[in-house]
Image 1 (cartoon, rainbow, N blue to C red):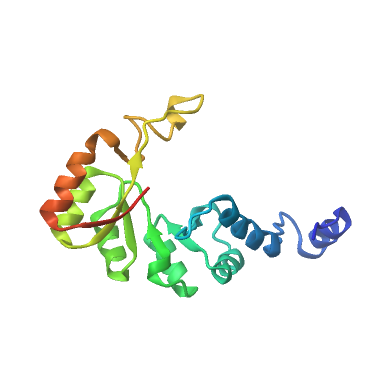
Image 2: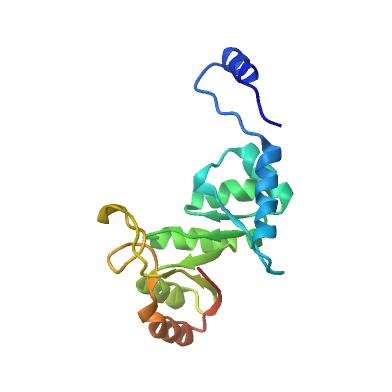
Length: 181
C-alpha cells in the first residue's frame, strides 16, 4: 500500500522528524521477487545487514526466510539475538582482526574470506573449517579510483589469478570451500 503525503505528514507530526517509514509488506515482496528473477532451486539470498539493521526489517526478512550477510561481530550477535540461526548468516568483513575471527568462529557462522593472508591464518588456527572465498572479479567501475570496488589495488576480494594459491592453502589446512562470492 502506498502511503499518501497526508499520512506521512501526520506521522511526522505525531513522531517528529527525521522519520523513517517502511512498508514491511513491500520489503518482503521485494525479497520474494528475487526468486522469480533468479531461477535456481538452491538460491539463498543474503540481505546485507549493513544496509539497514532496523530490527523490524530484520525480523520481517527473517519471517520471509532471508539469510543475512554480516560485517562485524556485533552484527552477528544482533542477528543471533533476533533468532537467526548460524546457518543463515555469513560473515563478510574486510581486514578482519584475529580477535574478530575467533569471536565469529565461536558462533558457528560461516566466514567469507577475501584475503590470502587471512585464509592462511584461518587455516592454521581452525584447520578443517568450512569457508567461503570472496573473489575480486577485477572489473573496475566508477568515476573515482578511491571508490572502486574491484581491481588489483582494492580491498575487496582475492584476485582470480590467485585461485591456485587459494586451493593450495585450503588443501594444506583441510579447509572445505563451500561457497564462492
